[in-house]
Image (cartoon, rainbow, N blue to C red; front, top):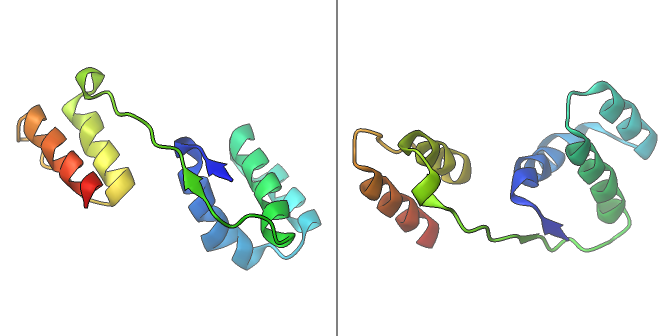
Length: 108
């Protein structure tokens, strides 16, 4: 199953919370109808429930997305590093330094 980058946090949430708390597909339906998730996130949870509980593919392939640093601000680069690597970059550095730090994190 291929996980879109915008659903990576939903995938983590599914494993950290939904699998622990939700005990049936009916319970999942009630939960998804009551929670504040986007339609894409709800659809992912619904479909992934079937895959996970029916012995489907557990291998997750994360789609590699090319980052366009030219159109990003230093704040956006900082946010990207925080979300992907749980690391705080220092915006006082130049944009090129932030890009180099991000690339270093990505390659490690």
